[in-house]
Length: 391
Image (cartoon, rainbow, N blue to C red; front, side, top):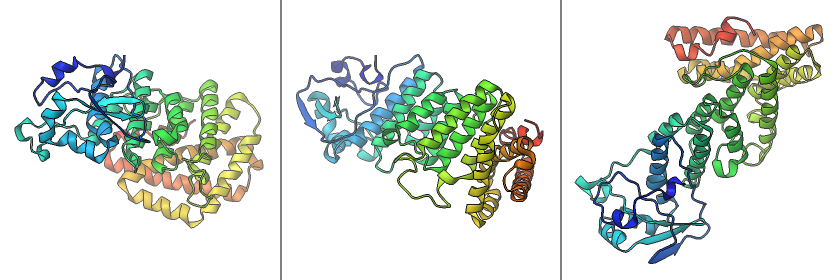
């Protein structure tokens, strides 16, 4: 059964008065009048799950935000016009969106002149965040991919990067790594693109958490557990997939690599170094890739030149960016520590290697003091690996 088709009888809905709590969304082909929208995006259909709260939020998103945005201006005007309300209820009008016929129901807003009969239309941002925090199971999160697709199709500018970052963070917290990867592969429809620094940093920190055994379900973004062979091997495969995806068009693949390109980000290469190094230590395996990625990391930092220092100092002055610096560079620092222990004198560019490690340690110490001065428990929980100096 689909949320999109779960509704009372059409006649009962047409006889209802505004406002009403049941959201009518009718994908039926029995219609008296119809209009077809050419080349419109496919309307997402959400599978009904046992999560009643999420079902309601998704139905609201579809009814109040996604469907209206995919209609023509003339059809959209009909939805909000008090003069058209009775006509739409008595003489149904349907619109074709993708392969689906959707009945147009009036949406009563105060601005349109409904006054005391106005519906309480949910704020789009609040609705998106509530759905993100309400999703739990794999089935829930598959529906959340549909929500991404719906909001992306409904907005030519796409979904804001900060919203996507929160989506990724909560998906990892729910253990839905596969769903995140699915959405990344479907970037053209989901809009979940690694070209956004906010998305990349959430994905990288989530994969760091996978290697460490997971992310806290109660406090999203906080890594729990410790390294083990199976979890680390899984994280290694996933981070290599992410690196490959970044070459896709829709992520970073349509532009030339320069110092600002996220494909050359020390955070990405640093996480790869960390995971390969931990894997080599746990399995007593080959350290060839450790040496390779240590060299690549140093080259990335050299390539950035002054940008590495100036951006870091700017981040540490900003209250919001400080925690992101910590989560971005703890894996880099840890990767260098692990690599130094494994490679010893055979580490690449020894002098610059040690200098880089010392510099990052200094910045992390500064960031730690900033968090402690704010008494920010949530952010401080991200630091045990750093503060304990253990792996």
